[in-house]
Length: 135
Picture: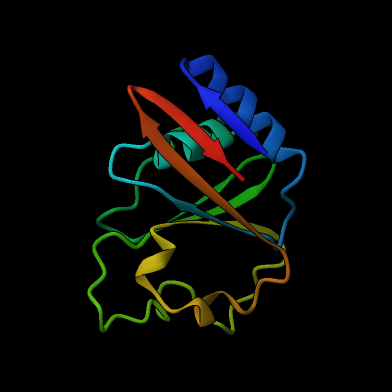
């Protein structure tokens, strides 16, 4: 599916669409260049799920939120090549009642995501000030 985003309202519409699909226990990975809108999409999802004050976990690596749904939001941008992120998303943690969203998943081994049966991959492109979301 492809969505074109040119306004803040459209972020909410995409988030609403996505929230109809993603369920507790699922993983959503977000890729795209810096400034593409990965965190903006997570904030829009938070809004749809009744979660306020979603912020980028760039420095903390992981934020947890509760609303209509429970959310774990990770940002692996600052990880180095040798980092495994096993301390951020431990494989023995129970994610069955949470939705996990990861920005910059390409910075870690895909084996980190094995515990998640359902995985959704979203890529955000920037073209002339317009965001194109593919999922």
